[in-house]
Image (cartoon, rainbow, N blue to C red):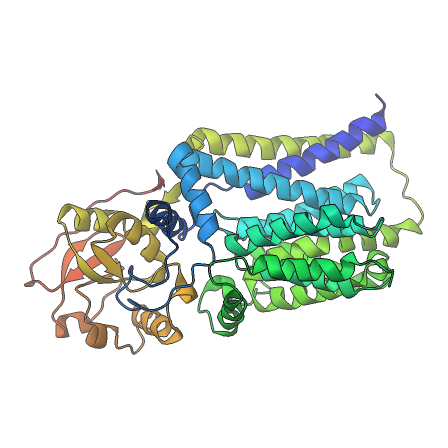
Length: 485
């Protein structure tokens, strides 16, 4: 075994430990509770919900649950392997996605240190959206589809194999997450992109993908729905534009700027122009919405590696002494061990479980409601909806939860956000909920005028109800990281 082989393995180890570090967060996303609840309900009833019955603001309205299959998968895993099984599934999906990205950038024949540098940037950008949500299936499918389509440039695909693969791929994707439309766009771009070789699959595969995606509970209507959802405003952080000065968004801006500056040196995008269109499209979406940054990072990985490789190819090689090489190797090894240690510490501290910060959710207020058998309508902030439904449904119907645009009309969304942001809203006067839950440090002067009084209070939340006013002493509740659910 020579020194080059050892060095190569060291860089690959660094890339692998980076995948573990960036994609293995075990903190619960605020939508995880509602996804598990819905998966459990689908399994119990044997039917996909069509009409909302979990809220009082959208009760009876049509409900497009386009992530139903992901919810069933999550629920099955949680029911058999618990929260640990869910987390391990997320880690496995992340590692598989990272492996596919690594294989894609390896096709550029860039030097291993460069590949490791690029994939760390991509993983850091991907980590912002890699939570336990249905979108992890999209990230895996995008990485897999990029790798597969790149491989077809070397040889014509065999129809007998490609057609069933693409059909199963898009059918599953269309029922797991709404971003399957990205996969259809990728196949469509590839099919019309030069070189114009007489390949029947270039025209057959897009048609197969379209037909396969229609095999969902909503049929072709799902396409109309997704377009409508993308066109309405989303007052959520992930749907806002990334800030240039935000340190958390630094990996995205580095990838975007580096890709743009080295674009004239591209070789990959000239050979596969469909990738250029895809890169520009995902970059546009990422600049507009933080939610799309992971998609852009996945699509930019191979082009960026290719362009930087071409940039340094004709430059004089910098002579690095043996001592300097050993120092660099030691630094890379230390970083790899450090990332591996942080991953191990996460397992030890949280017992390989999913956790969440108790201060971020109304843990004690929900326990109070459950202990006292409260029932009826409850107005609350969006981020608390899923947690509350998991613990209190069906006795309690909420004003808003993580299903968001799949069920709640824009006017209902604006009404809820306006109320809890202290702006003018008819939530109390028009909806007249039985209970209202707000942040513990927020005072709502309109409550008393509308007949509400606090019935529970702790450091996180205040629960109001229509009861005679009485002094409510703050309750000391749980703090810190607590096990899911």
